[in-house]
Length: 315
Image (cartoon, rainbow, N blue to C red; front, side, top):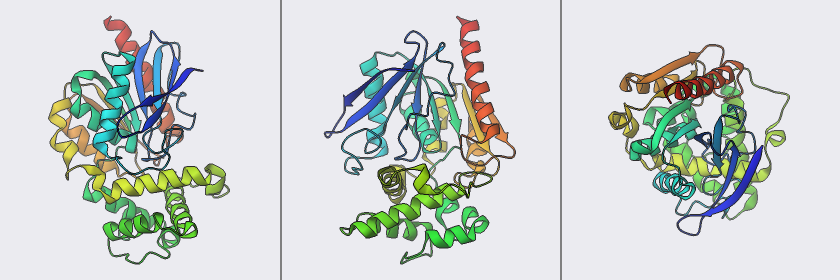
């Protein structure tokens, strides 16, 4: 149902792939994909009634159909925030809703903090706040993910020089992913990608291999960009989102999180909700991280219907 796609030039020679779907006169909503580096991959429209919403989706710097591919130069949270605002200005949208999961939730929050007057609603799934404890949850040998999936974690860190902390693990992967030897860099990307796939669902799909989920290029962009951002602590100060939550307390925010999410800890969404008096928190039992978990999927669909109904009754 995409009715238009185009390349949007932003700073430092980056070009973003942008897609428009739904009703051009409908409620504008920006779909912000996760990763970083996951790309939109053509599967972003299902939460939205395309008769009601004007859906804008784009591949962030360095991934999907954006160019240059897998480029980590001039690739930071601040650049991505500026990119979103550039798209809004280009499309002449006054205010829009933000819809993001995982890293997409992080970026939605970072943008809203910088541009609260341009944000009408925020829908977050599996919120990641970019704190020390969030990185440790995902990467540390003492983190929850490693404790629940010890065999998969052992495969993940195989060949890693330093395994004492999340930071040295991220640093080791970062160096290997940028190796001049393509065999070393490709293996590092595959290990990183496979680890995330292994822990993304409450019940892992062991019949499907990572190679069946993504191409080598998709693995590279997600692994490299995700590691790049974690290596640089998402280019934000510790507890940045919570410390600045007061700037967005007036915005209706819907927070959805799987109780057994091993990629992004549910505590992040709980803490965020405590600082946002205009937010709604839904913790989904029998769900992990993936947006494809049945309970999370239903909650996202209900939320988008609720927003549409609420807007229509106030107009």
